[in-house]
Length: 212
Image (cartoon, rainbow, N blue to C red; front, side, top):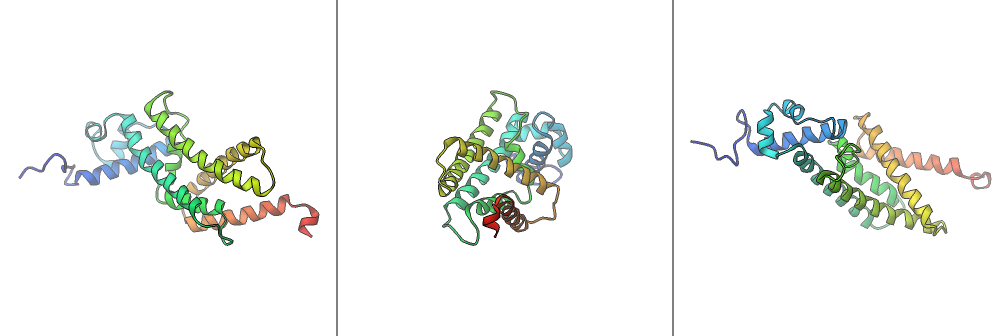
């Protein structure tokens, strides 16, 4: 009996399974190498399928990128929004809840963060516009959180808020990059490490009177 084309795969592997394998491999390639340096042929080779078959499944390289980007962007936005909506906790403040949510959402696919923050995307392309949409949405959430934090210190300067949002984005990227290089570190371990780093930062910036 002939297998319907919608379910057909390669070498006895169902198409849906092959597609998941392709997306996992492509997300890692785009995250590690960037859009410009990633080739459809390299992704196909990793999965063990032909380049024409991959094009048949996903279309162009840009279509494949978007198929990787959209679930990652949606997952990260959902994770951040959920973390920020949780009640304030003395055990884990908002910043740590957001970081824990990011680490949890990226666990098993850590390079996916860099799919969103890819500087090699073709300008004015659908890929660049879609990635920019997700980055703006994440920045808007960060801006809300940083503005709330600054208000607790008595600062209402919009430039302070903008600078802190920029710094927060860089911090998240740096932490994820470090995490990629330390695959043994779990999301919980990373969150606890961030808590220790933040505590050290408070001590570093404290005045002598505050330390005493």
